[in-house]
Image (cartoon, rainbow, N blue to C red; front, side, top):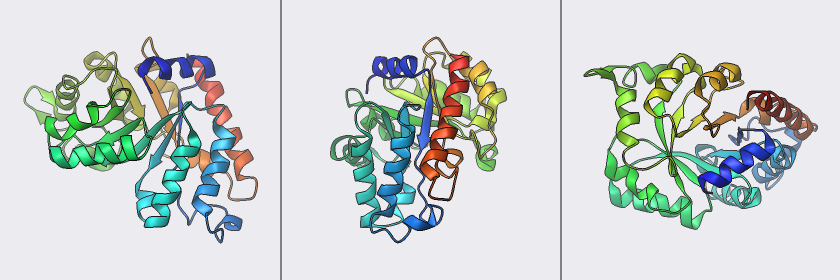
Length: 266
């Protein structure tokens, strides 16, 4: 999906909600757990309940890879079921030497129809470039995360700037706002003003709203640009809104609440 198509979806739906499909077989409703295709059927119900109020889905591949072949099959069916009208993110955090990254890019952009892959930039330009060679596809590079370990490297001084700032400004030169996004954790709200000074035009994928405590209001006020420039991810707060047979209806209600709040900020 190209940038203008994503912006069009955001404006039409008055939403920049990304629903995270971090589907854990231990957390899905009990009545589904003996289903031979439990993960896909759970995802299908969540997608049906939320597709009108979100513009994106983020599939955390770890939850699927942990299940072996069946998990990979469920992921493949899920990404096809989502369709072409939503921005589909493989949250895989890949990043390796160039020829290996070539194969990762092929896996997610050719074999599977994802629009974007999350990428770790530690190994440098040649590890990220393969993801930037596909028309209408995106690399979403880790910028500033919200985990405790962010202080180990990302928030350390690197010359005259913090390391995450150097990552943002350096990686931004490898692509354009048409094919590069950055991950910035929702709990790092105080840094959003500085981030927008460094990369005013790029989209930001912002996890950490909902169960992790990030403030949608703070993010929207400090990080939104003229094109919105945000995909705010909510995972557990939406998909596990209920552990009962009404889980789809509960997910729909929570997602609609996010959409209503987002509409007020756009």
